[in-house]
Image 1: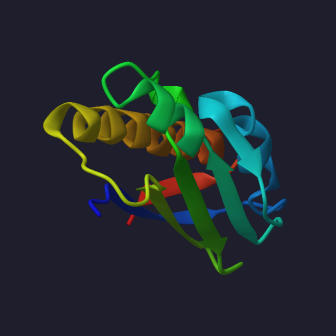
Image 2: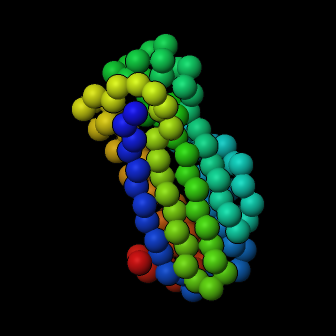
Length: 124
């Protein structure tokens, strides 16, 4: 079972609403659904069935099964993990590339959402 994972951390000053604005910005985009709270963000999206039916070469990268988990410690540190949830299967180079592009795009949108929430954001 191959997995693609992107981990990022940021130092954030002035994020009064926690991760709630990030949840609002990311849900609906990239095929993600909310499954968390304002302090601990959990988003998941995509479809195992669609991946199995269409195969990695034909599936849209927004439909890839994936998960985003993030924590905000309240003191200014946000840690996030963006990962594939393909499960058991063979991940060839083309599918791995789709996952890498999809997760990098979600990570970039996550950082943009942090910045729009009014916080002073520094990658950490």
